[in-house]
Image 1 (cartoon, rainbow, N blue to C red):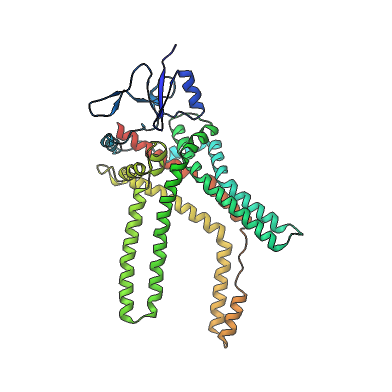
Image 2: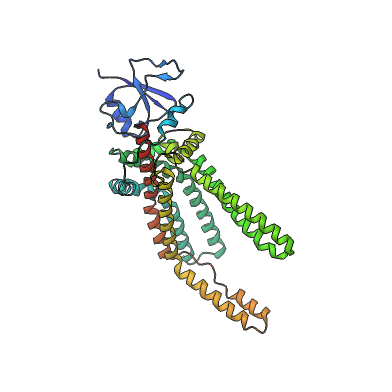
Length: 396
C-alpha cells in the first residue's frame, strides 16, 4: 500500500487517502496545492511555539502537483509574523506581467471563456428578451413593460449572485495555469463555489465603500453648486469646507484603493478570512520599500489598473460616441434658441418637448460591451501573476 495522507480543507481534516484518491480529489477541485497536508502515519504534533508542526502542503506531495505551486496556505494566529515576512519582496520581481498574463489567457482561453459567459449570460438574456418582447405584436403595452421589468430584475439579481463565483474562478484558474497545471472548468467552478460567502461579503464591503466615497465626491460638488445662493462670506466658508472634504475624500479613496489591491488573491488562493485577506493585501501593497519605485507592488498594480481603465473608457467612448454627438448638437441648438428668444417660456416648453428620449442600447454598444467582458479576465490574471511573483520572491 502506498503512502497515506491527511488533507486539511477549510479547517477540517480528510483522509487518510492514497495518491490515487488524491488525484481524483484534485480533478474534482477538492484539493488545491495550497491545502495543508501531512502523512497519515505521522501524528500532528504541537511544537514549542504552540503551533501545529509536521504539516506540509498538497503541492509538496510527490506525484500530485508539480514542485512549483501557488503560495502556501498559512494558518493565521501565532504565525502572523511568518506571513508578514513572506509577503515582503526580498529581490526584484522576475516576471513580465503583461507577457505572462497573455500567455495564461490564451493557454486557458476556453476555460476563461466559460467564466465570462457565466458572468454575462444573465445580462445578454435580459437584453435579448426585452427586445423580443418589446417588438412582439399583440401584447398590451403595460403588460409588456411589467414583464420586461420583472425579467430584467431577475437577471440582474442572478448576475450579482454569479459575480463572486466569477471572481474566485479567475483566481483559481489563473493560479493553476501560472504553475503549468491543467484544470477543467467544472473543477474551477466546484472550487469557486466554496468561496462564494467570503468573496460575496468582501465584494459588498469593498465596492460599497468605493460607492460611498464616490457619493461623497458628488456631495462636495453639490456644496460648491449651492454656494452661489449665499452671501460672499458664506460662499468662502462653504468653498473652504468643500476643499477640505475633497482632500479627505481623495486621501480616503487612495488609501482604501491600496488597502484592497490584492484582497481577491488572499481570500481565495491563501484561503484567509475576510479581515486577514484585507490586512495582508494592504501589507503586500505597501511592501518593497527596498526596491526601486517602479518595481514595488503598488506602482506595478497601479499601472495595470490605469491601462485597464484607459481601455474601458476608450470602449465606452467608442460605443456611446453617436449619442454623445447627438447630445452635443442638442446643447448647441438649445443655446442658440435661448440667446435669440423673444419668449423664454415658449422656448423652454419647446426644449422640454424636444428632449431626446431614452433609447435602448444599440447592437454596436452591446457588441463592444461583450468585447470588454471577454477581455476583462486579463485584469484578474495580471493581478494573480503579480501576486505570485512577489510571493515567490518573498518566500525565497
